Length: 303
Ligand SMILES: [Zn+2]
Image 1 (tube, rainbow, N blue to C red):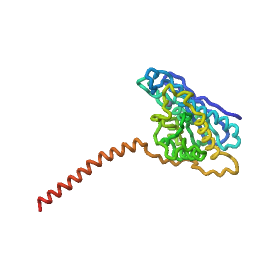
Image 2: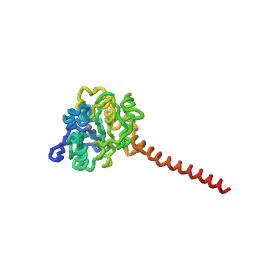
Image 3: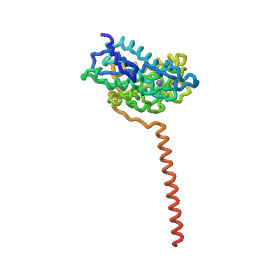
Image 4: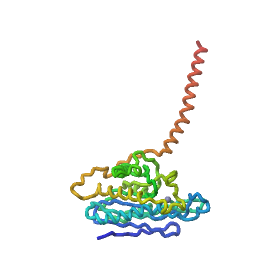
C-alpha cells in the first residue's frame, strides 16, 4: 500500500478548480494534515511597476515553496511510514490566492476558495472511525531570511510546539521567542472552524524589507533560499517524529492533543485600544480636575 490520492473538483464562477490529497498510512486512525496551496495569484497586484500588475505572480514562494516542502516530506515519511503511528495527508489546495482586487479586475473570487470547500466536504474524505489530530499549513516557507509570525487564528498550543521544536533544532531566527503577532485569513481557518487544531507557518508578507516580493512578479526562484526550505522541512519532520514515532524510547511530552488556544490580540488592535482608551480617558481626567477646581472656588466663595 503506497499513497492513495483523491481529487476534489469544484468550480469558482466558471473556472474548474481542483484540490488534491495524498494519504499515507491510510489504515491508521489518527490523521495529521500537512497542507499548502499550489495556485499562485493571477495578477501581480502589488508589483512596484504598475505596468506589470496585470502579469501573473510566478509564485515561487507564495505557493510553490510549501508544495516543494510537502513533496520532499512525502518522500521522507514514505521511507519511515512503518514507524509512524499516524496517517499523514499531503493536501494541496487550489484557488487560495485569487481574492478580489478591483484595481486590476480580479473580482468575484474570495481568498481560500479551495480550502473552504474541502473543509465543507471533509466528511466525504474520511471514515467516522478516524480522528483528525491537527493540520499544519505551510505558506511562504522558502524566502530568504525566513522568520515565521505568531499567527493568531492558529491553535496556540500547536503553533507554540512547532516554534519550540524549531528553536530546539537551532533555528532561532526562523522561530523567534518573540515573534510578530497577526491574524491571517489563510487555508487553516476553515479547519480551525471545524474544531481541528491547526497552525499556519507564514511570514510577515505585508511589511517586510527582508522579503518584499509578495504578489509581485519578483516572487521567483531568485528569491528562494534552500536553507529556508530545509529549516521548514526539518522542523515539520521532527514534529512528526516527536509525536508519532512508534519506538519504545520515544518519551516525548508535547502539547498533544493541542486543544489549548490562548491567542493574543493583534498588535494593531492593541494600538487602537490604547488610542480609544486615551481619547476617552483624557477628557474624563480634564473634566474631573475642572469640576474639582470649580468646586474649590465655589467653596471659597461660600466661606
Ligand atoms: Zn498570496
